[in-house]
Image 1 (tube, helix red, strand yellow):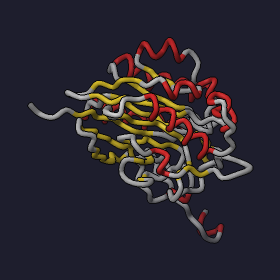
Image 2 (image 1 turned 45 degrees about the horizontal axis):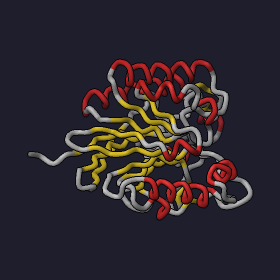
Image 3 (image 1 turned 30 degrees about the vertical axis):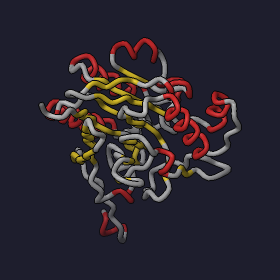
Length: 285
């Protein structure tokens, strides 16, 4: 009998509704999401992990909300795929978490409150399973109020919730974590908004020890952050000139029953390539 495994897709930082130099990117974003749907049909994952910054601002335009709604219908209703979501620093956790208790019954899990981090979801694979946890992006103060301890930095907040998860889960089970954070040593681009004002915004990678895989959001470059088990999937599209030339992708994650992990990047090809031209105005015209 073949050993079991769970296959996941990890994505983040869609920023639906974003404008680039005043131009709407919704058409480009819709085309990119169709590529994700195509990949889902090809590789048949057991769940999709969306690690924050679904929208580009706290009150997204109606067209951006409709686009997200359409994607969820195609994945959860039509394909019966489990989708797990955390809000990022560009999202409103309260809005993203609307009706989350009802939607969980249909296959959409939204971790929008501190207490949600301690409510894992079981993802069944082929002869194996993983338990999925999610830490929403929230002010450290709010997480501190839930844990009844003073917390002032993202590192303290994320680390404290991870500690609570480690205390409550079974040591023998494979687990994955969704988080939205700026991990120490990772490479940035020009299009990320600062996470924290008034102190260090960084989280050390060792906060995520013990998870088979940590699906990160916030930074727009696909990269490992403290080993292959802690990764950023990167943004859906190129959102600044500093990202020109970077391949945009979605991350396939295979977690074997013994806890070993393999990752593979699948390219997302933009509808229109982003270029940066510099020179005299006469030549540019």
